[in-house]
Image 1 (cartoon, one colour):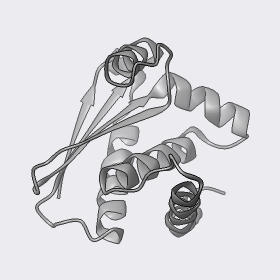
Image 2 (tube, rainbow, N blue to C red):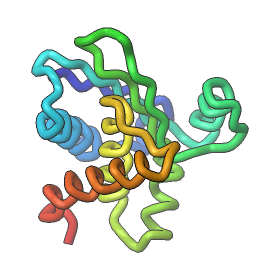
Image 3 (cartoon, rainbow, N blue to C red):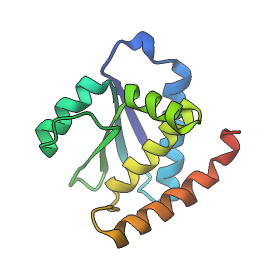
Length: 144
């Protein structure tokens, strides 16, 4: 599995430790979801302004969001995930948990979208939320 990480903001705001965490977590979630061994995932880290622009362009929503997923049609390319680190930090503080835990939540959510999960309908949302909780439980040891 190949995880490509792009930093679209000032790189001094992103630690090597965070990049390593994202790579390792993404690989493990992809393994848990039986993604192809040669699958490629792209993760882009941005700020609220960057994700707002993407959200407006691709979803017609003129506001920032926490995570966007862009699936690809190529069987070897899982797709692209874009995360707003600014929103992730804010949500972690509001949720009373660690920043890395919020990144974990957003990566799981994004990867599940790429493999076909959705939350437009109540039944789909329940199924996706259940799977998110199951996966996150596997990483509980990382977060006190």
